[in-house]
Image 1 (spheres, rainbow, N blue to C red):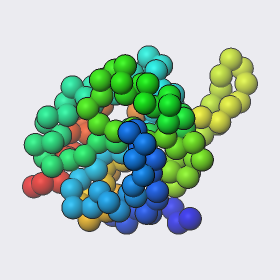
Image 2: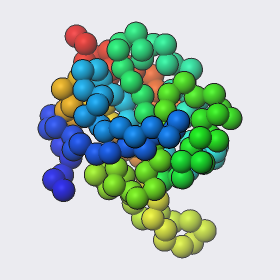
Image 3: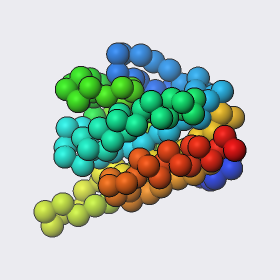
Length: 157
């Protein structure tokens, strides 16, 4: 798979969404898409990030923007996470890691002194034409959603 670069078309990948919906990344063309990756459903940082995106959903929708959250969790775990937290957007169950690998978000991390493969918290802004416009890697949750929203607004200018 080719390397993801700003200004280039993103690959078209199948998505398994909450609500047991099957779709493709190309189905989001025509409007901006924020695709954010988080390490694990129902953990503190991931919950806060989802709540922050959910709290700002009306502002993103005013920009015509769609938000999708993605992790390697099962569809059942994603359904439970979305339902419990009341997220106003779909989550992607990327159990086969195709989406994660395409966006290069799986990294070696240290956990309790051992190296493990995990998702590096990352966000990608894709424009209405399906081109990558901005990426954030190694995201810190606090203030991140506001920064993403500003980038979405800048697309429309």
